[in-house]
Length: 314
Image 1 (cartoon, rainbow, N blue to C red):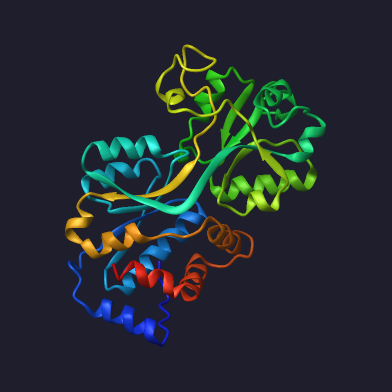
Image 2 (spheres, one colour):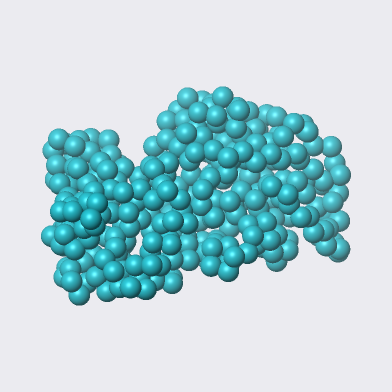
């Protein structure tokens, strides 16, 4: 990526410029991971630009969401800016337990990721958004490829989420079909919504979609940690994942060596926060208005200098 640096005048510039002018601990590149959804690209770009303002050398590396932990453990990758408790907490906890990965704390955004149906489906599927009502009318969601089973359109397979396991453990008459990309997922939602066609799919927040489209997240049996860890928990005594997905923080994580090699950068990463409202607005500018990730991230930085200056003044 080529990032345009816009430096403004004033007292704040003096603060950040003086910090950047100081000798950073190492000029070796700090490798930030990039994934396949706009919000994560924005979060990572904002962090990267701030680190560059502080004088650090930043490198962006494309990586799978869950598979990235292998690189974080070895130090081949350094920072992951979005680990969603909804889908990534197990992988994060396992990586932290090795002693090679650290949890840099919350980003300030709260995560919801779950099955979602548009409100117009309540006319043909009474009882929604209860999961049992959804399952009772599974045939309404069938496609030529999945009939007689209903189709659930999941996110890209790299996102995790245990949807296949959930379907099996709850005995649902659905087949999980994974969208190839984030863009494909929301293009299908837009198409179905315009036609009032049956659709049940993965939706998440913070994002513009829950605000744009009228609908509901499916209400599965409430998540508890035991649901994922203990097959005897819940309605299926033989299988785990017989519940909905957890909700919680969106976290930052990284190689344990970041704090030793780049302590100033580690402090800035820990200090990073952005609101879910801000992120939803930024993702909308990218996905709906066609603005570039770089331009939207820079606009946020220009409007929030007092916020990010504090990150690099730690």
